[in-house]
Image (cartoon, rainbow, N blue to C red):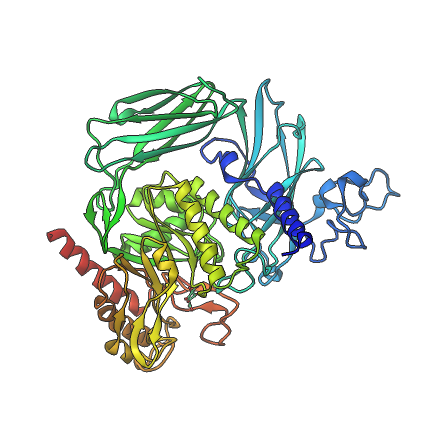
Length: 616
Ligand code: GCB
């Protein structure tokens, strides 16, 4: 690379880093109560980004006195009847937050571009020594955030939370929060331009203003060190604290009250050994209320304690071998207008369907789902595979793309690190093997391990046919050496031959690691019946399941699978009229919430397995 090119790359990386706050230094504030900004927001659809760029395509820059007439984030009204102001939030239509915009107005179903959101709110003057943050659960994909006409920052990535410090920007009385949301797909983005899901835009998760004392609880971690000794270690990170700040951690049900003190970096480490600890597992999803207090700040949440590791070809949960009876889930709801899941009730319904199916495991594809999902999984006793949207092709050699992926991974880990349910962080899905891709994902794996040593790493890889031996399925990928679980997607009988082929398949998976099938399945239009040889019928899909299950049973070291997928989901790639109509139909439940025949096939298989496990 020439010095000039290097300089450009470096500048891009630095510019990106300034825009996006690195996970380590930023509080999440999920657990802090705040002023909810959920509800109706005013919205302006702005496909040409008029509110952002002038007619020479120069960004309307606050330092250069941008035009009041068109700079939307200034949120002004004409000073007198002669003044030209070409937008008006007060009379613009509403969009609900949290919510995708696509399913709220018919004209936005396929929209990819910019929408401006505005919310006004009143806040009392901050007390002396108080700070305030605005927290967004997620905005897809890019958010430029302004408070009272001042820019707070930019966040990139559609499925992870972020906060901005607003202490200096709040006014006593009425405040105007403006967010430009842009969901245009881009080659260097994560995910990139091509996916098999709907690119729902909008402020899709909750928004709140959180007020905290100058020293406040930014993050914490509680880890069960060993399932035999029951020792627990952890730390609490206090923003604004130096050495010697007292922190108290209590678990009333265990009769534990631990005092710790921060070090120079504001981190208070502790460990303890409770007398009678009940471990978390899908059969007994025991959670304990953990309370943390530091000065004037306190948080509480319910935490379960368990260990997970591999031993040879097994996954051990609390030291015992476990089989993952799973299903893949997109964060999309079939009823109530469809679209991105935006309430805990919808998240719960998805998990209850998985339970009904007999699952003890879900793969949350292909990006971090909302925070309710993993908390409910804790409560319901469902183990979780949590993924970042490094999907299909990615700009593997682009430093900014890597930075973006690792930020999303870091923020996801930070948000959910105390969830007993999550046992696997997934780095990617079906990425084409190349040196650049393996380097990217190896680095991502190192990043994940540096942030969390208590979970397993995986990625959904691919299988291939052995050259010259069509019926020998091989998994051979340098990434398999990096991850803890060799997971792969396979579609024998759907993209690869007909269901009869399943009976002929043998496997070559040369790794002394647990093997997991992260996808299989086929489409069926619910209500379409016919012979099992007729594609798109419920009978074809059911037969495919009947034939796939014994084929997977032949895999040495198989620790479970997650068929594709619980519920039909929207995808612009799926255009077949009368059958797909814009939906991927591989769901076991239709886009109207009705179960297909294959649901019962998998359910019977899982129930039988679960019954056998109970007698072991
Ligand atoms: C896959 C992808 C998933 C697709 C699915 C399909 O392998 O991982 O995102 O939706 O196949 O239906 O083709």
